[in-house]
Structures are given as C-alpha cells and as structure tokens.
Length: 302
Image (cartoon, rainbow, N blue to C red; front, side):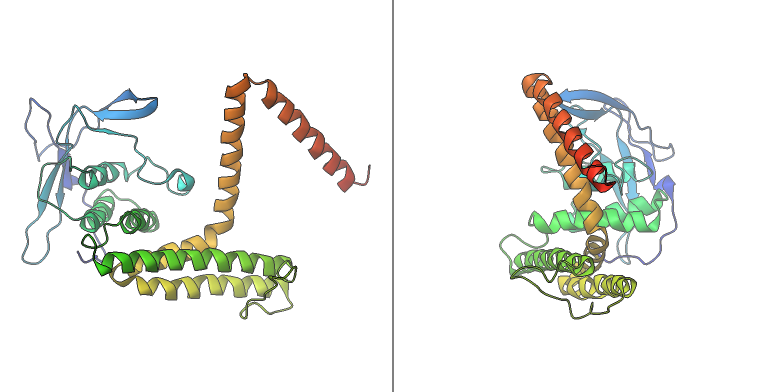
C-alpha cells in the first residue's frame, strides 16, 4: 500500500460502531467506553461499544470500512501498541489511541474486526493514516508507524511465508540495527577517549578531529548518514529503515540509561517481594554508603 505525503486530518472517519444490540451509526462520533478487567494478573480493558473507521481508498478502489472489535466479550487491550521501553517518547494514550486500537484489531490473529481482509503491512499504513485523521503530529505519527513496521518485519509478516523477501527484510533490519548500535558504542568511546583502550582500540574515520565539539558534530553527521544509507536497503520498508536507524543512533544512550534504571527498579521490586523488604533495605543502605564514600572522595573529604 503506497504512502501519502500529506493527509488532511478528518476525525469524522471514526464513528460509533454500535454494540450487540445497536447497529453502527456513521453519523455519530465514536464512544470510547472501556471496563477494566483482570486477565491473569495483567491489567486489561474491555470495550463496551464498537468503534468504526472509514479508511481512505485508492485510485480504482473505494474507501474501506472497519468495525472493531468484532467480539465485544472476548476482546481486550492494554493500550500498549508501543513497547514499554519507548513509552517516555511515545505514550500509549493520546490522540493516536483510537488508531492504536484499530491496529490491534486488524493484526490480531484471528482478526477481531468486521471488514475487508488486510495484510499486516497494509494494516500498518491504515494505522498511520488513522493517526493522521485524529490529528496526531507528524513526527510522532511516523515514529509510531516505524515501531509497528519493525514488529511486522521481525515477527515474519513482511512477505509470504517462507519467501526470500521475508528473510531479506529481516536480514536488512537486523544488520542495520546491529551496525547502528555497534558504531554508536564505538563513537561514544571515541568521544570519551575510551576507544584507544585495550586490544579492541579503534577510531572511526569520520571522527578524527582533536576538538571535542567538532568530534561531537562529526559523530552526529555519521549518525544521520550511515543509518540512512543502511535503511535504504530495506526495499519497500525503506522509510522505516531510515527512521529507525537514525532514531536509534540519536536515542541509543538515553534508551540504555532508561533500560538500566527500569531493570534496577524491577530488580528492587522483586527483591522486596521475596523477603518482605529486609534484603531490599540492606541493599539500599549499602548503596547509600557506597554513594557517600564516592561523594566524600570527590570533594576531597576522605
């Protein structure tokens, strides 16, 4: 499905999808009613009314109408279309939420919507256009679409089962992201002076300036050019390749920090659950003592 360079928001494409007793009404705005349910210890939400969306057609093909979810009793959502690691950048709620629910229904297996069949990557584009109709800002819209496109590639829905295309897209994506992370790590060591340490010493050829700030500027230029060129190898997913590569290059450090802090938090929570807080308290006391020693040493008082 081709992308459209510019879309005029039209939130009237979303409408009331009715329920088990009332039919859909394209003249009424949607009613977002959800009930919190507990699904094996996980927080989920069940829709009380269906939502309708009239997706844009293409030349020679009329608009398509989707009503979701098909089964109000069994369908639940956690509103988390975006991985938790990137929730600080793209929150799971906001203007894009109805489009996220639509996407969840379209890609669920078996499908949980009423309407014409769609492929996984077609559903991703419908998702992006639905976000545009809701007034989601351009940058956020493309970032969210890139995230779901990566999921499409890595779960193996980027081509027919067993096809060479499917494996090609997977290899291109894995190569791009791996090289981006690797070069980002080397660039960080280069800037901080750590690239000359040990047997793996290496200096990136585009970061040889003796000036710290010029080296930062050169590293930023490499973070744009190299992932963009690698992203072009993704074929029809090249937009996702360029966006994901450049975004990863620039957000690598903050993402690692958030991952480390979140892992620490989860670890402390687990420790607190195991022994009712006694071991957790001991760990916190030792952490404070260590931090105090480092602080005193830094100010020359030790």
